[in-house]
View 1 (cartoon, rainbow, N blue to C red):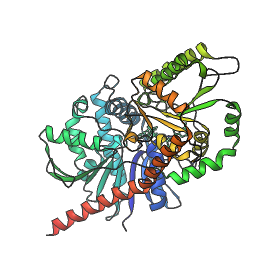
View 2: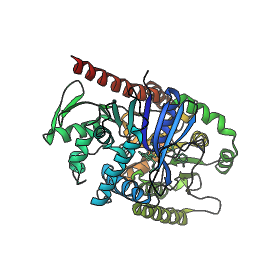
View 3: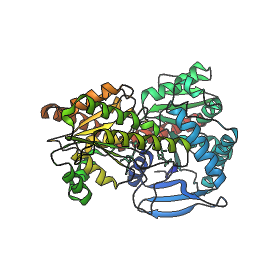
View 4: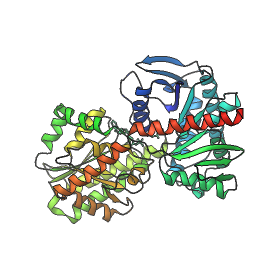
Length: 465
Ligand code: ADP
Ligand code: G6P
């Protein structure tokens, strides 16, 4: 079997022994631990000059990481990736800004990383690239003569063509994406947006077998919804229930209901609307005063991007305002915690709560929604309130699905979740667990890699014929 090389900007920091908050790091780490392979990407450090990768092997995974120079970090990571692509791909064109030099830096870093990776490659390696930082990575590898199979998975939404066109170099980016052999998206809707861009722009055509013919290339384009390992999470949630932090919250919540939210502190997660909908519940249903609390765990992320500084301030203001308005001497309606927790502890906290409140304005998949379901006690499960704009909504029909722009509807869903009868909760949970098991993390990985191997085998057979 050929060696698997995974490439992503964020590599799970190995020294801490646990990954950064973020769906990509969690998903890739779990998927790679079993197959083994190399994980290549940014070390998270700023360096004076680009250097050869540092290598660190743990178990079956070899981590090969490189630093970024300050200029590279500013232009490629903070700039084009997180101030142009991330907002535009999450439908926040109001927050997206374009700078030609940052885009040049983005292309330059992709080319530098490609060169650094090439030095490590063996002829039969297969390469799996992840996320929006690396849209042109295959193009950069092809330009320096790499012929290995290369697949790409986008963890975030792929926007509809009108939205994508707000990113000035959209055509160049999509053309570069067509250098991959397989392109994977989280949902059918994301896949369709890509196909629409290609077909409506007259760049190529899609065929019924999932292939796209565009810019002189043939590639497979599919939807591969990322999953989790639900039974491992259920077990951890149960086992970590006796930890001190979990006990503290349990004690504080005695006699009260708990609504739980966990996100990176990102404007795409709909945190302001979420707080305001909770406020609406308190306004419309005084019987909940003193009887329900919202715990929002939200560690800061990308704090040197201005839009993230603003959302943090806004949210602090909203939490303070709502608490000031409703709090009693022995009750704080919103507990807002800007910190990371060990993943297993989070799962135990999910199990303690009656409602999982996951309401992004736009999200590729949202693993937290899946984790929340998996962490529940099947005999007394909590209820998931989930945004229709998370990829996970396609797969979790047992959730109370809401429109996060409709605060009244969200408040009603909270009320319904808090008062849902046990039988209904159990039936919804069992249905969702079955779906999570049928489409777990290994299904995602294996389906993607099988397509990557098939497409490239077919191509080499055609070349030989
Ligand atoms: P995103 O990838 O946009 O951050 P996801 O919901 O898909 O959103 O993935 C987030 C992942 O990061 C989940 O696995 C979640 O458990 C983890 N995570 C989120 N917040 C925290 C936190 N405060 N502490 C530890 N892990 C977190
Ligand atoms: C999302 C993105 C990932 C990213 C993560 C954390 O999950 O899809 O690519 O790694 O957020 O963000 P950061 O900027 O800290 O890597």
